[in-house]
Length: 212
Length: 193
Image 1 (cartoon, rainbow over the protein chains, first blue to last red):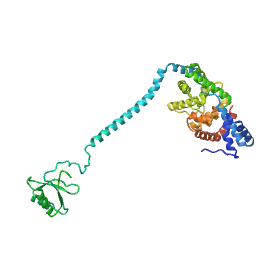
Image 2: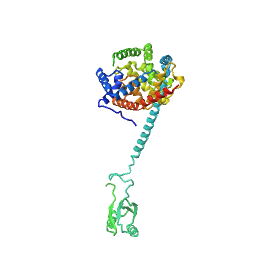
Image 3: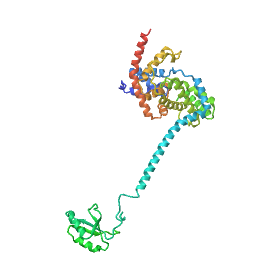
Image 4: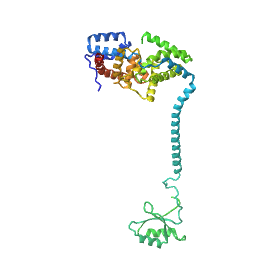
């Protein structure tokens, strides 16, 4: 845990802050004189300043790790003579990273391209259809769209279709409508339509046309 | 900045100009002038002489290449220490950070290291051990190399406020441990034969 310094007077924080700069001779003369005056009256700061001086002295001692300066300089000068050897080594380190990044970008670009292509190609056969679009299957001649009532039994439905010579060619769709068409091409659509509308259990009967 | 600093900086700028023109003698002078302080600065981060030399040579290799780009926004010493700091970080990443050693092997201690200095170094290394790497660098640059807050901010490429905070916390930590370490060292000295 860090213990904050104990200040014995309100001038102590200023003295504490000023110490390194007075020690390294970068404080103004006025600041130096102020600190000297403060230290004369403050024992705690005096002790701290002595500690700071010792720290500065310890840090200004020469390195105790022996490094041969002249040998190092000769190696540096030798390095200047061989820039072609040195630089590729550095370039290779940088080049490896650059190549890796370029490869990653390329893979991403290919992925995005493939995704775009897939989206574009699937866009041609949209899963929805507008009202003005032509139906996927051609309209059978004389086709009629019929919505039977929910209470109509299957046997009644079959009997009705049989009596009118109709067959189911589509449906039921989402609203329960069947598309029926005459089995014989000679049948009159208008007549069939009237009979369907009059039949019990038929809620709706409308001719299917090519254009909405 | 005092007169001596101004003169040194003026000389360093001339050397950089000569280096920009391809003068290797100027490079050699600058190298020799800065070798001691760079060794001292870097030996707080690693004890391996070959790594220290590698960092110093990387630093001067860059200085040689970039001498012509130096615009004089800071002192030359600040510029060089900034390069050395970044090269040092890179080397530490490559070689792994080594803590400041408590006990330096006998064969690594220069023969002319007086006992008093050894005690002081021991006291210092134990104190610096308690600091984070960034705090250690700030303390070294301020107390060891005499850089201002602005200089240290330029060297470490961080806001002045950050340097101020690092220095404050480093000083508080050192204030809490150094006196006790000094007493322990004194006791050890008294007990030693």
